[in-house]
Length: 220
Ligand code: CO
Image (cartoon, rainbow, N blue to C red):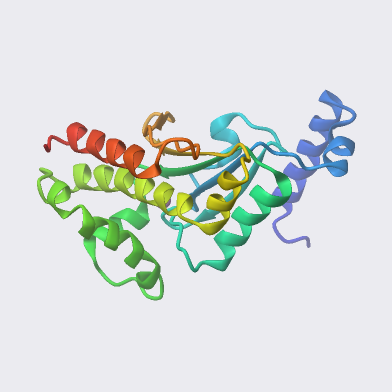
């Protein structure tokens, strides 16, 4: 008996459909990978990068972890970023958070879930940095939504501060960073307007995006 047979059946149907719609589909993909986008998102099963953006295989390079966190010493994330920027020559990096994120909820609740507590510590650092906004929120849902946005903006800042993004900008490589938030409730993506291109100083753009969050959540 084949294990997980329904998944293999679905795969065969999908491959057959792809070929009937475009006979050269796999031949083209096999020959070259040339995506324009790197998606850094949450591992959450409800936030699949390709489907949400309508992008086909070959069009988006993807890194996902719990809470879409970019840590300066995370060799996994940094390697994905370096390969995407230096080898694939991608043009856009989007950090994408989402409302209703289990990582954000756990970070705010502060209850122990095991090893992952150490990873969520990075999100708690963001929460502590913006404690004034979060403590002013009326309930947990507002706090979670607010922290989801703040976390995206802080992670975009982290991407901008990596040596490899700095090097790409210094040599004039076109590379833009973006921060988006996805709403599980209606399937909509929203731009948090923290796009960085290496032209304007990142700090000013980040500060404006953080100020916009304060405005949306009734502070300042
Ligand atoms: Co999540």
